[in-house]
Amino acid sequence: NAGVMQNPRHLVRRRGQEARLRCSPMKGHSHVYWYRQLPEEGLKFMVYLQKENIIDESGMPKERFSAEFPKEGPSILRIQQVVRGDSAAYFCASSPALGRNTDTQYFGPGTRLTVL
Amino acid sequence: DQQVKQNSPSLSVQEGRISILNCDYTNSMFDYFLWYKKYPAEGPTFLISISSIKDKNEDGRFTVFLNKSAKHLSLHIVPSQPGDSAVYFCAASVEYNNNDMRFGAGTRLTVKP
Image (cartoon, rainbow over all chains, first blue to last red; front, top):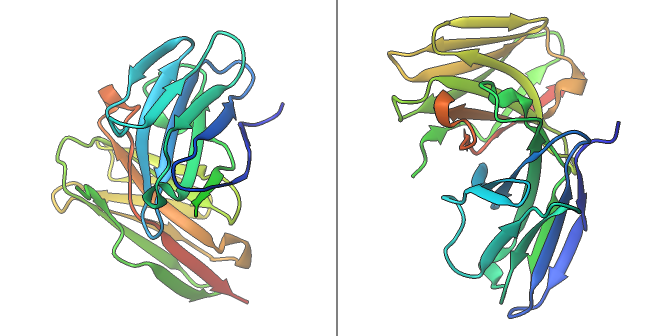
């Protein structure tokens, strides 16, 4: 049973380009969460999605960032017109359902985005 | 707004001794707390959790203590092993809204043989 998969593992972009980060949840999981880890900081919640629905995007910057989780295919975190401050590790987690225990979130290995 | 704080960025312990990792929080609405362990180039993995109705939860070598009045929790690892060397993140959530976990900055634990 494959775990949460993220690709690419490393992504380099120049300022102004677009970055697309993909996350395939664990089999049977219908909930996806995106987190960002800036250097020397903890993981920060960005967005929570179910299939075809954004449930909570309170942690996501209002501009340039968007996320989707289509009926088919992986969840995508999209960053338009990247800036150097977007350089971070982006982690995706999945869970089977929004249960009462948050320990059911399983994390992927992360995508390290570097903006030149 | 750093609602969850891990004030020690690093900790070094001798193999076989106890490791104590600390975490403080400011939001009194938090009622569920977790510890995650992270190896380099991997995502965090869940380690142990505790609900605010308890003050202690034990799982093998790992014990988490919660002091609600002090808004403080700690993770004890005993005996520490070299394989425990990793970054440990403390996380907290309000259980009804548990998709918004708040993480601390992490503590890098090094266990020396």
